[in-house]
Figure 1: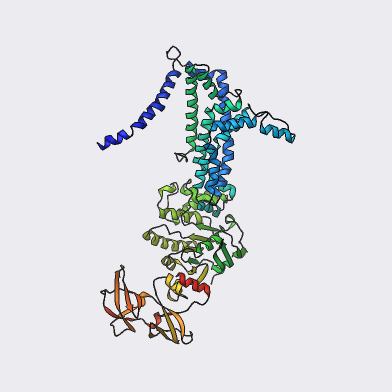
Figure 2: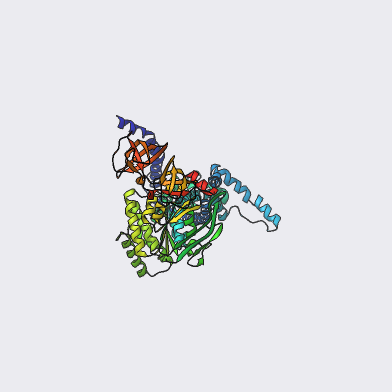
Length: 273
Length: 357
């Protein structure tokens, strides 16, 4: 009887998993492998080979990589500095870096659109200084910038977490054994924060790869990521089969990149989970 | 006497308003097992960290082997530390941990492999090289930490309460291991502990510290048998510390009774502290001792019974192997040789020590 009660407690979650995760995935898979006449086909999957789609997925990968790399280069030293702070308000400073996550991300991206536009605040300032206006909006660079701005906290947090878990005496032991700062960084700190790095990379790379709102707003329709293509197929092209097929391909890319990262993560279970 | 290897000169260190060490002067001889002993907050760990290079003194100098190393970073000092919580590198195997220092020194692979085997044999963990840190018990991890330090052939090994996290039996075994290691390696050990038994068992020299001051430096026998003040007497082993008056040479008055002792040169009618170890108190028939009292408590301690005897308004702590029942009227006797007379603390610093103790 108790057993049954316990199993019943899991009910809502099972409904959730089936209704909102498994069923939608099944529907997408169904659309992906059928044509508009409901017959089985692989052409929606194969459509990825279409030069337009190849171009957009390559661009997605490129921008995703750039965004992840920039986030990593910014977040790692920052996490190191934050974790070495020995004062009472350490967690407050970390909180400041996380704070933007609490605001609606559409609003943040829209405000960047205003700031970066040709008549925006930044260009007005640049003209005033004599440098002259620079075209920033609607370029791949502005898309990467927006992604970095949005996803940076997801890189900082797991790295910072794994960094604070390194005990002082480990660093002191390394010094004691003759290691200089560089050796300590390479031999001790980076290996011990590797799971944090991997978590951060996954949490930034996956949304960057699949993003379409940022490229829409900051790319002005000129930066066509695979996410944008899929969105168009669903919202404008109304070819749900093709959209689903491309979604499945994108999902494979995501799973592959996570599997690749897990090879480096010897400990298993990256730091943030 | 071997030469002085390390010299602390007028070392002062404070954190904010808290003065941890105040003009500390101390030397360590070559091939000596020296123990810094004291309660937490006495400055012993700070002294060790200053020597390791993890802290720099506010004032004063540390001379090591004739050179001033006061501001030298830890990686440039020819000494190694065994940390309290082992501080092994969790992402490396045991062999990699041991090899860490040697790889930095760019030793050849053959040399390193040789050293790893030698060190593992020395700490009785032969063949453990490829295992992970997690697979070891606390005692084994501590041995690896020792192995990792000694392969670098330091002149001095610093040990910061290395046995603190181990259970009693293992701690005792490791004490013998450390003595054996010290003899085999022939290097200087600077050992920090708050455990008086550890200090007495292993050390050539004990430095008793309290509140940033050195209370007494001496061999274990000297520290135990002839403590210089009430703090040392109380910290090293159990003791009865009684306020007394030195009537004249070889006679002291405690608790209203004049008793013979062997000490001379304190002058006449001078207030002193009298230390009597509980195992030195003999229980006699009531009329045979220099005072008589009643047993108020008997506790079985394994090797002996611990008695409390109320005599002349003082609770005497007594160790005896004979069993007595509570309420028995007995006499107390101590042979003159076992009565230790100490000057009352004079300076404020020493006074503070006594209050704390």
